[in-house]
Length: 546
Image (tube, rainbow, N blue to C red):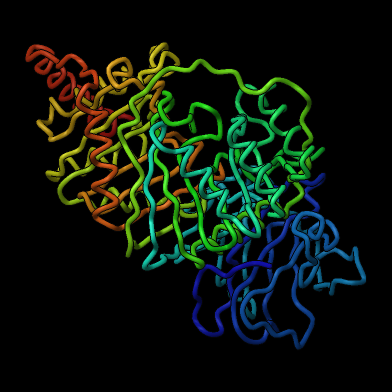
């Protein structure tokens, strides 16, 4: 089933979606989707080598899918198309073909004719950039507003009102909230998390299963570094208790819909959702009084919101990339107990407005949140990486632009060894941001966390606070992959008290954070001169080199 994401004028026929380079052998499952209302007499679809038209008397009212090979299309999408342009199945009506229409992978075009009049032309490269497995789609007159790969969901923005929010943080109080939420479940618990190795979380889920609650777990099948022995042992114990555990992994000869299933959420009884930045390991959910990662989390009570996440879970577990995983016997996760004062307690707030932020479907909402800032932005991230040597991360660029219009921006990054050891890590990112701030005299500052002073293991958070009125709690890292190609989950919460709760935690982490050395005035002058010279060279190149 395909969702029309654009509105066309009555009677107009146009291609709104196509996939020229799918994953099956010989691209047998390539297809196009038309949108329009009325008779298709006189409508023809062509490329440079072939074409097809529809049987006389064919009408459409909305969308219509035409595939090259009906059974191949069904293998990929789970349902048959409306028509096929090669005769492969008696179950699928045929269009009337002329020549050999094959969508080339790297360079081709699609043409739509009405009564021999060209009404639409799509070229690639040009209108779209070719990529294997990418579905090209038209939304509000724009092709490919985001990358959409075969098998991915197409969730639309939606907001839920009057949600009850219990805010919590790791390491202070995360395990207590998780354990209480699982203990309160009566019917069903659905878990989707990148990694699960915590003995405490495993025991809580097993306890719910023993009480008669249906528990199901979805994990990433190929995390960075592979599935650890501790996670395999946790999976084994869950299976032994009767809890089915699945992993998202590329099927043999196929592709997973997402590079990583990096989300971290749990749905309880279709009435509540727990969502966090942390994986389900000991560092993300330590017992009270023990050190661990800094992360943010929320327990959200609202049936509509819970149903939204349940539906997403069922979509993600319904595809061919989901397979059972059984783990193996082994020791529980080992850890070193480090005392931590746990000063932050959970708090519950009412009347929140909550908007899910799902990657890659609606991850652009993060940019919208940053753009909305009028006074302040607080950003706490495990790390930030740029798109290339010359381009800033889009979220970072949006944040810096906010400071250029007077918004006070603070950025706090992790300083754990693997986030500062290389030559382009968090310490260099902090220095870059502060150089920009100094050169342009912006209300912008970045720091690396002082883990020794704060007692935290590392900063693993992916959070944003805007104007002390909205807060983003999510699993979305600020890199190229996370918002565009991973399955990620987050929420934007509009409720000042919730924002102030997380702002207080941010301020406590910020105060002892390590400032990077400020550039000297000589350095600023040199940097300014270099910038002017660079601009002059660009202008010369544009004027004289053709």
